[in-house]
Image (cartoon, rainbow, N blue to C red; front, side):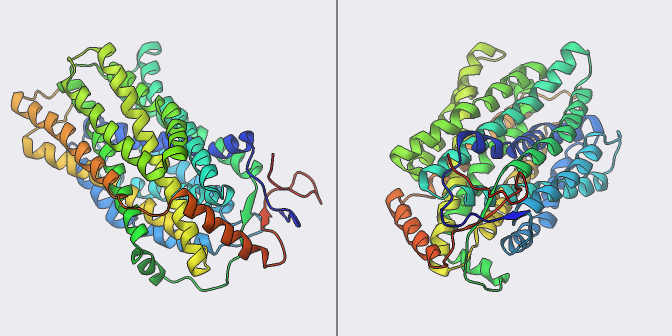
Length: 473
């Protein structure tokens, strides 16, 4: 149902409304972590695809990445009684549920074609959810500081989902005496159940502001126009590198911590729980820092700090959980903070574009960053598995690797993430869109919006017929 709030602008979301909307990140963050850490290992070892998994993940991006620009074009021009982005999130949930079931219940011996097909469908569902959620969040939070808050909440709640999928295999192993494969299958069932619950909560309880913009036909050439903007180039490069570093680490994580550091799979998962759970601290802490030193400086702090923590982990004693836990916590907090800054910077650049062009292109912008994010995640798997092949490392269950292969694994694990994350932090050197500049942009946008003779439309589900739905304290 469509309701309009006239005569009063929508205020900032309350804390409860912010947390309700942030629930949309629970299934995405959980699945994203599982795909980065568990799925490649699961298909390489248990399903039996070996290092061929890396090639499949790389190929899927050549097929999947162009999908995001297409979806972004459609989303920015969607008009329905339910809103602009809400229907896309509702569509993404069933697509994702089907793909998750087929992926996590894959039969032993499944072919590369099987993995390719269901990865493609799964990424389609993820794209629908992520693009809609990020663009919707940008319309809910208009100010510089509000965006740090809402994207921090999304990252923080997403952390809960990521922690859950890491804890589940541990519980299956300890309480049910299940195998590693059974633990991953239990993760799949958790994701299938969680996705519709959280998406229903968000779509039923969150209003959707719709800003008035000059009517125009959106073309694929608009992407070329975006790429001609220096701030957009900074953004997509930083997004690729910032995601590539942790994704590289994730792809090698279980191999490194079991074969190099001497941890059991359960202990390695325990450390990963600490790493992911640190996002609950890192996301809001980085948002707080950004509102004091600006977002690009906060991004640089997280990049440098993350790299230092990886070095500490690499040189720490083997199989010592107590010593490994603190640097893992700090690395996880800093990684989460980097993502919050990239998403918040994207929304700010979207405002700059809307002011100059008179068009709402936030969906296109998030489609571009979603594409670089997905490319980084997939290329990390493809490249790391390629490197493992070069050094002769064998990922198969019960395989024995010699000192040379383990050393190659260690160097790949340490060098790749540090190089990429530092490049990501450097991308925003010289960035001029400060908090003061963004405040001026928002003032001009608000003044222009006021000329339309009515406040922004609120697209939401009214609790009862005729009731006006607005956001505010």
